[in-house]
Length: 101
Image (cartoon, rainbow, N blue to C red; front, side, top):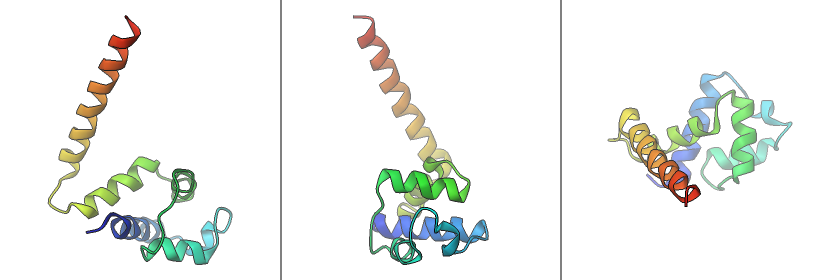
């Protein structure tokens, strides 16, 4: 599944699970804009993902994780988060090493 459609499905799923309407997002965007996101017609900025996640009551990584799980349906939550944890551990270790030089 293309990422913008995976994000669209994740956004819709989370909005429905929270029993929110598109109008509930009026403080951060128009209903028309949210509709275009939920149909995969547009891709949001990082700032918009952060604002949407706040209204949804979830961390932005939750929304993005759900998107990538939609994109790769054979991937489990454990596998995806394990990969992210491993990559972050490597990056943080490298940053620590650079700071000691």
